[in-house]
Image 1: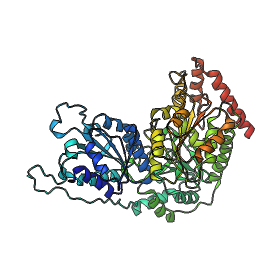
Image 2: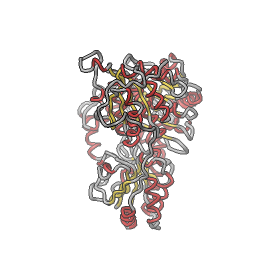
Image 3: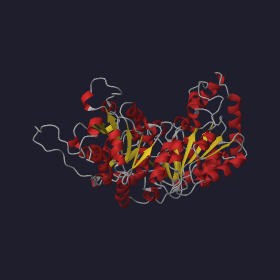
Image 4: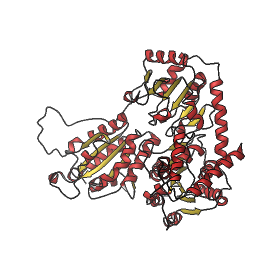
Length: 589
């Protein structure tokens, strides 16, 4: 059997260390599927139910491993379905290769069935975007695509027409008229060593040594540098604030951190941003600038590996273009340790009070179940090296505040796209990458319902993921966002009949249980986490529990009250829940 172009492409993926491809077959990629069949000893194909899920899985795989994630879809609608997951990869800077099919070259431009120009569609999402039109381009375009995905920390796209897929690997159909041979490349990428210039480090050290009250804001770009960040914080006497994407950068029980920032953050972090002279930004492009100091109010040192992002959110006094670890290592010997610890100690005390308030909200007696209690139970029972995949919405607030990073725990979500539905596909992608680790997804019912078919994918591959649904029968985040604008909620609650997600899990062959009483919750979670295959716990939580900001502003309170005055339909239940929250916090003081 002669070697095809598709075999060359798939074999080259294996040369790059690719071991898993997530996708859904179609008649536009039959040649590529045959290439995968002939390379089953090298690469595993994971069959999904929706191409969007395949892109999310590839994105999560890339985020968790640092290696290229690969997804595959057929021409036309299959490629269209990938787009949302690919934008997640783009905006969170994950290296992903998308491979799509295309109609055979002889009919391109004729309006053939399912003819969608995917290279045009992907022009905005991809850092490398090519259609293969000659077998001689392979395997070089695979090398260039993956190299660009790594270098650009984003999406690369190869679109392969049907006839090219099945062409003989050595086919050379056209006369060569250019003074060049067909490309010959190697499956190699080596990232550049990135250390700021000495003169920039000296400027930064001079500013920080005379920086007054200082804070550190750490994002996901500082991943893996926790001990170095603590050393920097100790030297500067600086509390450390974490973005949501950067939650796992530093343990939540670190004596230096004040936790998160923004609407999902903590009151100490919010207060800290208005009580500093200097801000050090490490590997973050945090977009919510209303939660940062006013421009010009503080001195700013920003560290980022991408020069174009330095100074995007605040005017930067000293930009340091470099890897966070290499930069801190080079900076520390140039800094004087501050003996004055009052600034740091003040916020350590504030965090102690904040943790007590959050613990009080984790009330096991509340009925309906408090979502804070659900997150706290999961936090207590999860392994110290668990991976938590979180969806977007109010669920992110409960995870941010009540699921603690400790030991070797990791935390992933759609950071910048903030799309709904990636939680389950993320868990599947990461469990494939790390089959021995405990992988959990914490989702709202709205996000889970979007791609719930992928629970069947988990069952088919016998993946021991645990799905926990924070079921408030609503699009909770949108509900509260409407009210904060002063509008009564509208079109955000899923009325009866309610779907039975636990029955769906059991129908797929997994563990499934529905919990409505707080006394049953802990045992159900323990059983799900111990189950050797896919497990799902659907938890009916209080639908009227608001994800309150760490520090409520006057404007937010005024608009919230306006929503009540304008006819908020569940105002009595919401008021009762807020009263219970305040009462439990007072009891905990």
